[in-house]
Amino acid sequence: MTSTHAELAKRHRAVLPEWLALYYDEPIDVERGEGRHVWDAEGNRYLDFFGGILTTMTAHALPEVTAAVSEQAGKVLHTSTLYLNRPMVELAERVAELSGIDDPRVFFTTSGTEANDTALLLATGYRGSNQVLALRNSYHGRSFSSMAVTGNRTWSPTSLSPVQTAYVHGSRRRGTPLAGLPDEEFTAACVADLEDVLGQLHGNVACLIAEPIQGVGGFAVPPDGLFAQFKEVLDRHGILWISDEVQTGWGRTGEHFWGWQAHDAAGPPDIVTFAKGIGNGLSIGGVIARAEVMNSVRANSISTFGGSPITAAGALANLDHLIANDLQGNAARIGAVLRGELDGAVGRIPAVAEVRGKGLMIGIELVHTDGTPAPELAGEVLEEARRGGVLIGKGGLDGNVLRIAPPLSLTEQEAREGARILLAALEKAGQR
Image (tube, rainbow, N blue to C red; front, side):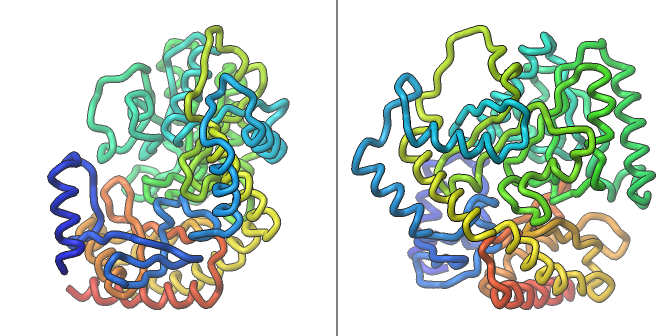
């Protein structure tokens, strides 16, 4: 590692928390980006297949976003929600129109964590209950309340909790008693588990919070329609459904604009949370809820930074670009190309247990020859891919799943180039 990166890494460790993770044995300083590529401070160029944790949704340095932010910055950066804010109102109108929620209201936050906090506040207040259902292997943020509904030990540092959480099966299969079940049987088993868990609680449960595809959990994908069957059970008890779309929203799965739409037979969620991709790197998140639920808060409230003029202007430009260029359709088309390349690793590279996901949200689960999780191998592939010129992520309950999520404007050539580098990294790491 040359002095540029080494010195910055040393300074990072001297002033930032030890628990603030850095990728790579030799951490890199990403200095600039364009399209689907980024460059580090030493001039190395990479295909970005992780998008700053699924956040660079359209492209790096998208001219429309840059122009919108620059124009708004020349007017006013900040006012707060105590004043009318035209960019925020216009963005809220667009999000509400696209939401699929009945009579929607939109509240903006600064992150997905804060969005999930707000959703939990709405649900528990509306239902008058602190009992919450969440999925095993889930992740919903790093705040006190969002960690309280996180079913992944790697990201949950405390057992203290402001809510009583009960965890149900729903997405993760490998390593569970439900592994190997076909979709229909898996769904039936999960619904039975939900009914059983509800039978052990004190009646008035507030909500179920669930990711349509588990992000940090390693892109674990439930069968289509599973949450629709969950909703039938929830509706009988008056329990709200919160769909955490922080990673699945805005067309990333290709087949739908929202992840919950693969589970819509019983109607839409009561609450949807979002963040990451809508801002393309700007700090913005939010909550969409039925008016009855959103307006149930019986106290004054504001958001100092949520929906600020500059982030709302940039997010609106980003959303307009996404729709105008059918990046959801591109995610479906190019995601199929990328999956087609990567699927060939199953059965050919022994460490690859499964390739899964939808659109441009793809996970590769790695195991040892005895079938046990191989997190150290995932780390080696991460390093080898970087050396080859591709940045990816990792996740899963055991940290043994590679996470691949490029900007939705990825081209076919870039998909094939990235797949070639990833397959070479898998083969090389698997030989060690």
